[in-house]
Image (cartoon, rainbow, N blue to C red; front, side, top):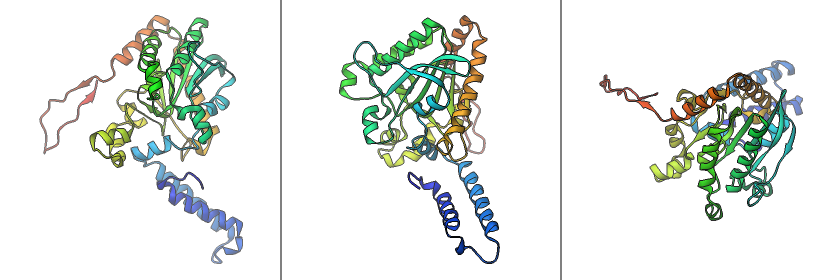
Length: 335
């Protein structure tokens, strides 16, 4: 099996054993029937898979979020949405293929959907700039969002990027300004906005299309101000400490929900979204429709007020002044 992760090795070994037995039934044990031996291995495989994927640490979830077989934005546009019609260009500089967007339907809703897109191979990654958008990508996204606002269409954004492109050309064309304008304008758009982190949610590159009434995150995705490797290089002066940084950053879906930075976790198929893309897409659709139905019933003024309060509350903490008990200092809690 290609693209296997270290913690998946026990699963791969059992799967290979099962495949070998099915391909060469003459090798099965004579103590039990062929069917019984198959059932035993299948049961062991299911138990192993469930045990491994129910106890993943933060770094392992980061690895899953980056899995090359994981469904990307265009995969969800094909399976979660219908009638997608892509729109191109920012009308200022160029077309950025790291950012895709256009009109689509989600259930009975007509929406504008925007997302960052990675590539599957070297050629496509060069075309998509590894999912790292330039300033023109964020300006294209804003153009589409303003179009949605003009026609009263809800906005759905799908986030899967390591971050905005940090190259000289992007700086010359004002990448920071492009993202900052998006943050300001998304806060003011009158239509419902839902953002979903489907893989990597890296820094301002993710936040540039992440200001929303509801922020969802897939079970094995992550959302962070910096990559674990970048954090490790700064704090430990060693990128090899990325696993330690991932734990400290609190970037997993469970951590983010507890901190109030996301509104809901979208469950993935056992083993990750890449194991069953159809099920992952169906789960995402169900959760998007649920939140869209709720937001559609909220008056515009109230929705804008709640959106503003939601982001203003981020980063507020209550200091616990209780004295340490048996050497243990009580932790601060999110406000």
